[in-house]
Length: 116
Image (cartoon, rainbow, N blue to C red; front, side):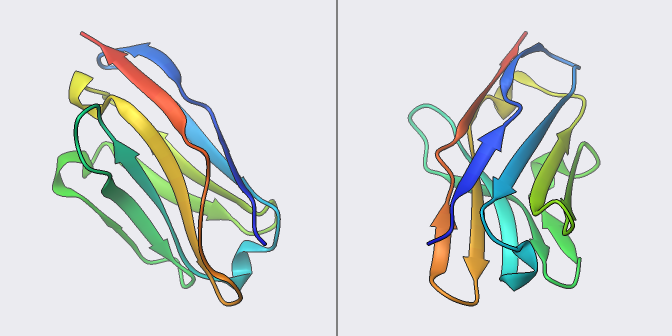
């Protein structure tokens, strides 16, 4: 069983920045990939950014150039640096990991609210 615990969400004005963290209870080198998803009110959960075990990344178009996903294997932590935030970035952000043993795991989510 893998536990993923997010932190770093909060209320920020448009144009501001936040850094989300996701601490894993096991070595993240045992993951095939990790990602950040978000869910806005009344909308489906969507993939925001993904990072592979090899370090390659991909982003949805709406956050390219503003968000950066990264991982610190020594700290077993996944990050999402968010800059130039917009009101449409508001939502609950979830950490996701696909691990060699056990498969898919999700964090409990952290709220990000961007005010205009």
